[in-house]
Amino acid sequence: MRSIKSIAIAASVLGAAATTQAQTVVDITGSTAGRSAVHQAILTVLSNETYVYNGSSFNGASKVLVKGDISGTPVTIRTSWSGSAAGVRDVAQNNSAVWFANTAINTVALNGTNVNLANNTANTVQDVAEIAFSDVFQSSTIYGSPALVDDKAGIIPFKFYASADKPAGLTNITPLQARFLWGSGYIPLAMFTGNAADQATFIFATGRDPESGTRITAMAEIGYGVFTAV
Image 1 (cartoon, helix red, strand yellow):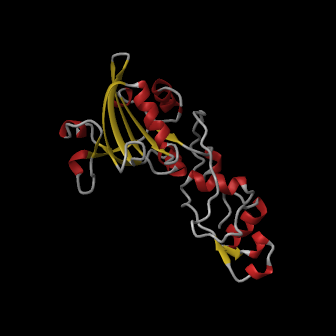
Image 2 (cartoon, rainbow, N blue to C red):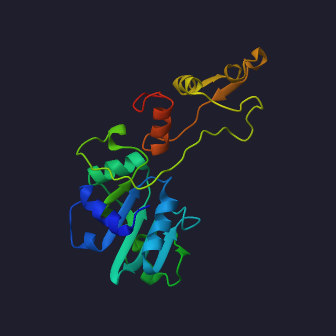
Image 3 (cartoon, rainbow, N blue to C red):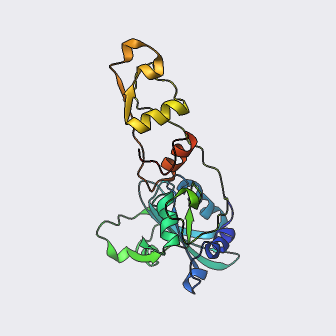
């Protein structure tokens, strides 16, 4: 991950309007897969930081608010994760989302506290994100306009997984099998094992919603097509 200085510069590249608040408050949305790395990068570049979060842990939180400084300059960074394509959409269209209010830390004294935001409007505010982290390029989403500028910041690996109670014969999946599986919704286990006795056992496709970069990446990697219905 790049420093928050670089992230702040990227905000203007991504087309957000420059305001007085945007010079000191940076709002980040987008990929849930990358949030752990982003949260750690924020803590790394800030000094004297204090934070609150909404979720089971800081790294996996759906929303965080971090206050600190960079070279003595006060900075507030807020995240609200929605998915890669959703993040591209919201930055491109200047859509507002729910964030921690800047006063949330003042009302919660302990550093690193999980704040339940359900029905807690005193600690939330509507605002527009300056930055979206995405696992995919804008051209791989349906939100192609207005054009945003991509700045590569990291690498996120992906794997295909089967459920814990999968049949013993299901150990791998090829791009051809994956295309058939997601195109049909389910296919016989025999197509994986080559065993006629597995013809009556079916493997079902599951996945993520259309705003997810994980879904887009998977559909691209197997050659199915990011815009093809599953």
